[in-house]
Length: 223
Ligand SMILES: [Zn+2]
Image 1 (tube, protein in one colour):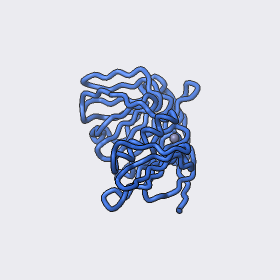
Image 2: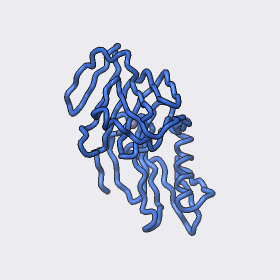
Image 3: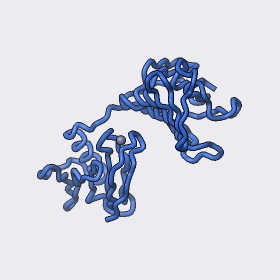
Image 4: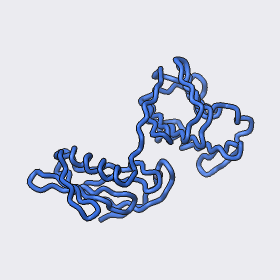
């Protein structure tokens, strides 16, 4: 079995990842799902390994089209079949281990916007054009996914105003902009709020943003 080192893309925790044919992997620290892989479409989806970091906490198995979850020394019959049984098993495990994350409905009233992080934009004004694909909030982390595969992670957002013209997040502990290899864009930029200062990290270099403390952590302005 191949073992790799994996860093959580949400909280930077490092862990060992064992690669199975069918498995999911949650971060042991922030509990977010980092992997969900299976041979679905090509072969059986079981045995399906449910991992938390390097530890296998449960296995979904199939026996003559009956699915069961092996978890904490017990065999738990699942009611669903095939891929849905895998989801049922994962839900069960996450529930018992207290690792279920909330899914908070988040309103946004426009689909195309200019993006500013602490007053900074990543492009020239006429190119600051981002199309929102979706917004997901789990109570701690707000993820804005854009259509050209960029992502914005906003940790512990506070003082949020959402109108038809803008989405304004006044405070956050950390904001991370991931361009995902988009052409002509620089790599991940991280803004960390600490002791009233905003520290910006980009490719190993770090600087303090002066005079940006009053700017909203994130501002999306309708295009
Ligand atoms: Zn994590």
